[in-house]
Length: 163
Image (tube, rainbow, N blue to C red; front, side):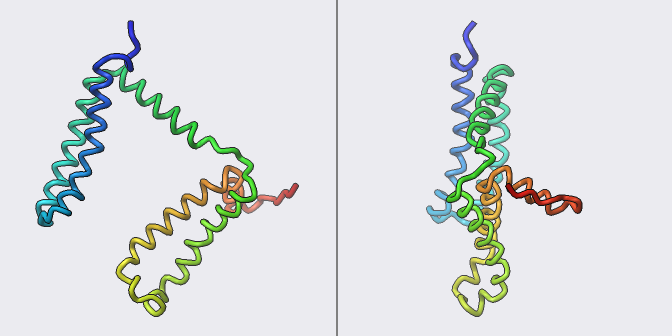
């Protein structure tokens, strides 16, 4: 018996999942075409519901074994992508610390943004979201040892051990 990934059902299921993801490109296209806000909101609602239906259809087409194989392949790919060494190099550490400090400093200066750069005031939400993304990215950039150091901040009896 052939593996599920070799059959036409698995390929059709992958096609449905790709269609599910690609359908979201209709939202910016509708916006660029000059659609009204109500039309775009309706489109988003239709896409939200249709994506759930397409996901169920993809699972039904692939079958349980095909869907489990897809999940295993995705998990393997993500795990290999996230398998960074616990010890980080000098450059990676410095970049991680910079990424960690930039949003913290930006949060302190956020209240003074209107005085120094009034043209950025309408973009405060986007700048704050960017800061959050940088902060989370810095935690991954700094590696597993940094997670332990961060965890130790909240343990009263933690001791510092420098090599």
